[in-house]
Amino acid sequence: MISAFEDRLLSALRGFNHILHAFLAIALVLASIMVLWEFSMDVVHSFEVNNLAHGFLKALGTLFIVWTLSSLISAEINYVHTGVFHVVVFIEVAMISLLRQLIIEPVRTATATNAQNLDQLTSPWHYGLLLASLLVIGILHKLITSSEKKGVIQEAKSSNSILSENKE
Image (cartoon, rainbow, N blue to C red; front, side):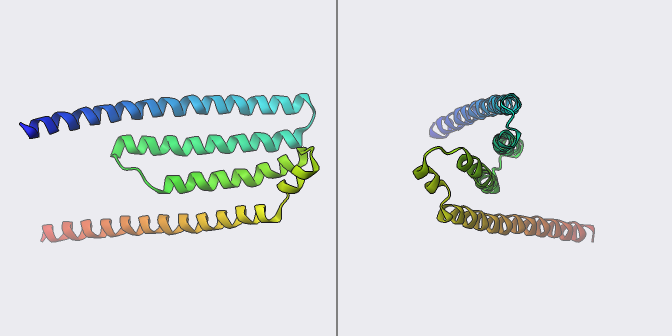
C-alpha cells in the first residue's frame, strides 16, 4: 500500500516537474524575445541621438544577456532530453556576466554625471576584482570541461573494451 502511494506521488512529482520545465522554457523564450527587442531599440536610439559608440557598447551589453539566455535554453533542452543538468552552464553564465560587466563599466563611466559616482566606477579595485573573478571562473571552466572530456573518453574506452571482450 505504501509503495503504491509512493509510486503515485513520484509520478505526480515528475509530472509537476515537467510542467515547471515547460514553464521555464516558455519564460526563457519570452525573455529572449524581450531582450532582442531591447537590443533593437538600443540600436535605433543610438542612431537617433547620433552616439553610435555609446549605443554600440550598450547594445553589446544587451547581447551578452541574449548569450546568457541562449546558454540557459540549451541547458534546458539538454535536461529535457537527457535528464542531466551540467554544472558548467552556471560557470558559463557567470563568465558571460563578468564579461558583460567589463564592457558595461566603461559606458557607465562615460555617462556618469556625479564626480563621486565617477570615482566609484573607475576604482582600480573594482576592475581588478572583476578581472580576478573572470580568471578564477575561466580556470574553473577549463578544469570542469577537461574533466568531463576525460570522463567521456574513459567511458568510450570502457565500452570499446567490453565490446571487444564480448566478440571473443
